[in-house]
Each structure stands twice: as structure tokens, then as C-alpha cells.
Length: 341
Ligand SMILES: [Ca+2]
Ligand SMILES: [Ca+2]
Image 1 (tube, rainbow, N blue to C red):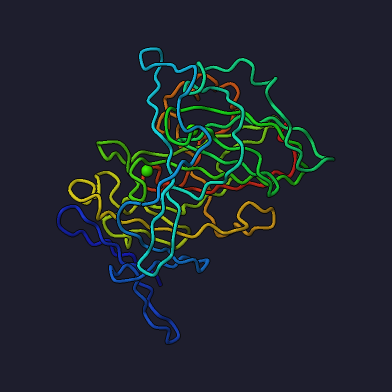
Image 2 (tube, rainbow, N blue to C red):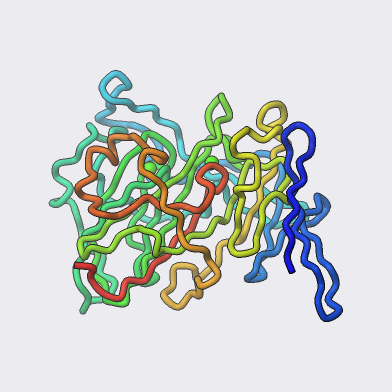
């Protein structure tokens, strides 16, 4: 029998103890100790804690600056912030790229990009090149908006990625040829400017994520996808993250900022789960990943890169995990058995 005991401490800090009452002589186990080196989830994957900001920062997305066609703030917004990837190391020496171990592949074609272009890209159809995954497959066009960054894989093959990792907000289009059953694997990243502690800008804002994709065969992101988080920050105490039934950071402070964010961001902690090497493969077993959570569009974005193109996103829905603020690296998967229309 599992009993969950939320214990409210002072200063708004909530410590969650998950107590499993033993049966048949099994010992009672308690997770959630601040001294625990990591947090194990049902698949046996252990969360690993790091503390403080990343080092060794380097460019993490194809577009590293607004070098041409720059649209200024007064003309519709262009708050460019570089998308950097840094590295954090746990006490035991495990090293993680933050906010994500991005793939160094080519960028997808712009649908809307007011960083390198003027916003709307009316020529996107003529700029598409088909990524051939299965020569006998069907040709599909896909529209993707990631807050802030995405990578798309189909049947285990890289198709394209977001050219703008942080801001401004942009959207993209891809084309590929692939066979059913067609396994979509999408990396979504809520990027950060304070790498390693899950926050952004001078205000140390927590930011939030979200992802939507729609494909020309009628498939698209919805609650039938699965989604799991692999980087949770900022945290005062990583033991707030539950792992039974899929990682769940909604018990961590999300209505209020973590205490560390106010006065000691260098002491903010993060919980990492290693990204499986084969997570994009059709054969990867995602049965232990929880269903994706569908989020209302207005909770994710009011940016023109999405709102100006809603008809292209059909009946697709924004997905993420249960916590759009603290879950910063989310992997999502879905296998389509055929066209949906
Ligand atoms: Ca982006
Ligand atoms: Ca965040």
C-alpha cells in the first residue's frame, strides 16, 4: 500500500514522502530524503542531482544571431537571446548538457522567423527538400512550433530542428518520406539563459514550455502521444519530484518561485535523467512514459509564430508533461499506424 504524505514546512517548502508499506516481509522504503543521491523511477532510471549553473557554454542552435533582415521590437518584436548549451556535473561525476543534448543537424525551413527574416516566410513550400527515410513511403509535410526549441525524428531518423533555440519565437515546416507504422519522436526544450538552473533573463524567470506539430496525413500532437521529462529545474530540493507513474514535478513549488531563485540561484538544484541513446527508434519501449498532457494554446503562447498559422496546425494540440514550468527537456513519442484522414 502506498501512502503519500505531503508535509508542509515553513517558507512554503513542501517535502513529499512516498511511503510504501511492506507486504510479505518487504521492508518499508522511503524516498524523498534530501540525502538521497538520486530518485529512481519505475523503469529503474535514476534521477541525478546537480547544483548551480553550467559552464563551458557554446552555441546550441543553428541560428546564433540576427544577422540579416532584422525586425526590430517596434515592428513586431525581436527579443533575440542566444541559445547556449552548457554542462553541469553531479557530485558523482555524471555530466549533462543543459538545457538539452541537442543534435547538430540542419535547421528546418522557416514558416515564421523574425530573427533571420521578416517574420512570415511566403516561400516556404518552394524551399522544402524531402528527407527520404523510407523510399517506398508516403510524402508528408509537417508544421511545428516549439516553445522554445524542437528536434523532429521519424522512424529513428533525424528530419530537422528549430533554428532559434531561445527567442524570438518562430515556427517551422518540414517534409519527409516515410512508411507506416510511422514513429514520431520529438525533443522539446524550454530553453534558459541561466543554463543549469532552469531560469531566464535578468529576472530569473522560470519560463514555460510547449510543443505542437501537425502533419499532412492528419496526424499531430495530442493526448495519445507519450511525453516524459528529463531535466527538471530550478528546485530547492529534488526530492519533491515523484517518480511513480511517470516523473511528476507538480508537487514542487510552481505557484511560487523556489526559494533559491529569489536569493541564491547558484544554489538552485536540478534533476536530470539520462536521455536513452535509442529514444527515437521505433523499437524503443516508451510504455513507461506517461501520456502527454494537452495544454490550452493560450497557456503556452500568444506568439504570432503560432497564432498566425493556426489553420496549418489542424486539430493538433499543444502537449508537454504535467509541469510546463519546471520540466525543461521533454521527449515525446507517437506511432501512427496510418493516415488520420
Ligand atoms: Ca524556437
Ligand atoms: Ca522552465
